[in-house]
Image 1: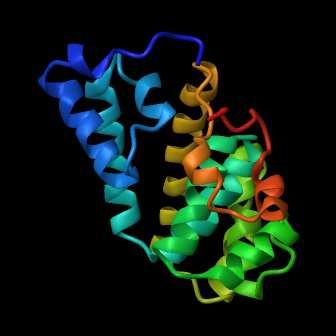
Image 2 (image 1 turned 180 degrees about the vertical axis):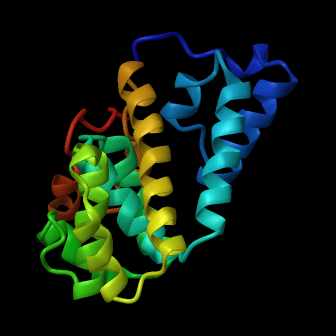
Length: 196
């Protein structure tokens, strides 16, 4: 990381809340938590926004869109983390394996592939999205709320990936090591995984 992490022993109440939440979720204090330690108020606000977006949509779809955005932004941190959520929270090893083998989403079924492609386009060139992109999702059964949720999930991820990469945060070895080497290799899309 490019900045110094605020030591937990020096944490004020807001930072303790941020650190404790991250520790509880991961079982350790992830590198990205330290990257945001100088602005725990912003970290908590982002977390609330992210939870609001995620809580209003299908969790599996959220993870597919988030992984697509993270890959497009070359964020190893978020690609590894959300691949673990897809596997461990959603319980979808099959989709995870497909995304590792076909990072462009081409191995997914038609609906998931369309969501992945739309999310990638939102992450890389949102001004190029046109009515046809949205109509394709509608034809496949997504409502306007569903389309909005995908756009929101990607938009929130763009903020987070930009901040973490700007501050030099890395994916954590304890999470990365839960994947077979061939899967992990496909997830290292930007910065390397932090050394143990």
